[in-house]
Image 1 (cartoon, helix red, strand yellow):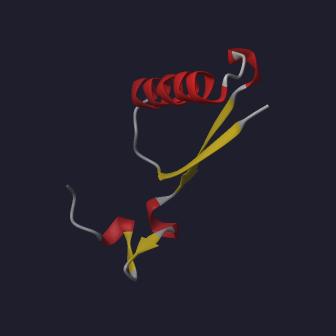
Image 2 (tube, one colour):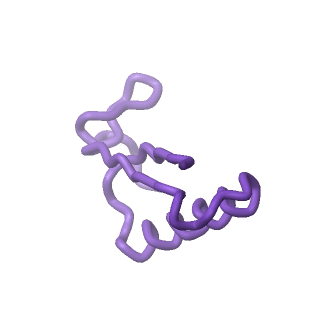
Image 3 (spheres, helix red, strand yellow):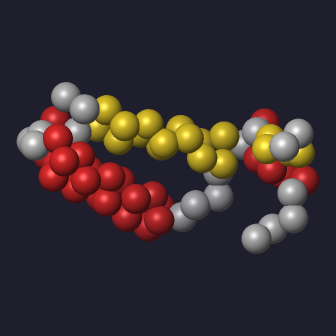
Length: 64
């Protein structure tokens, strides 16, 4: 029963999350020979004010 956790800053659309989950699930099924129903993918979202990179909060970083 493979489990995959994706840590990301909040802000992605539902469609983006669904597409990512599908791609990850397909990759696990293909590479681990796991049944699709055994694969669990969890997106762990952080508020931009609670996560930083290089000492700078994501809420204070310039948008890309």
